[in-house]
Image 1: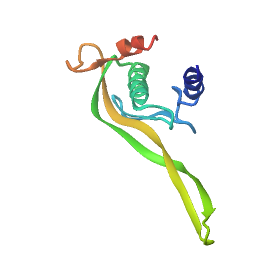
Image 2: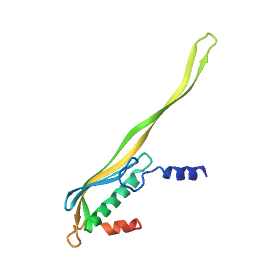
Image 3: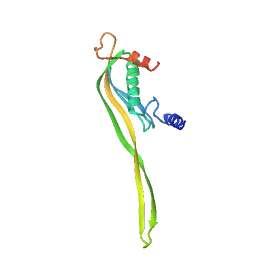
Image 4: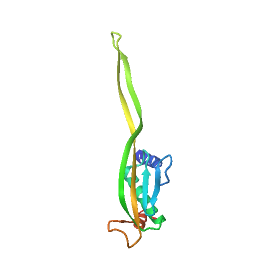
Amino acid sequence: MRIILLSILLSGCATQYQRNGYTGGFSEMKLNSDLFEVNFRGNGYTGASTVKRYFLRRCAELTLENGFDYFVFVDQEAYSGKYGGSTTERGTISKDFAGNYQYNGTIDQSYVTKHGRTGTIKAFVKGKQPETSYDAQEILNSFGQ
């Protein structure tokens, strides 16, 4: 029961599918009429697989928004980094019979891993797409859109 409750609470903290903001999201830049740079940045609660899905979704939306049907990746890169973190120290201080002090303890450090993905896509209209292209509408359908 605790695991389910914790999962529900943490899922609310993950980056939602949204424009880039304080908690992450997507951004893009039009390089020319059929070439786009797309980025998706997650926060510490967003896993690499979710970042990949949201990145692919934004590529598909951008393709359709600009009047195209298909796209290919010119390049893409997944990245992650460790940020911030906290240090916790726990221990005890004791005094022996001779009056000497001794410290016994542990120090724990934790970091937040943030995942992201960036890439360039080239868009195509139906009939001119390469064989290895992604069908933008088919991708969006898989997201229930």
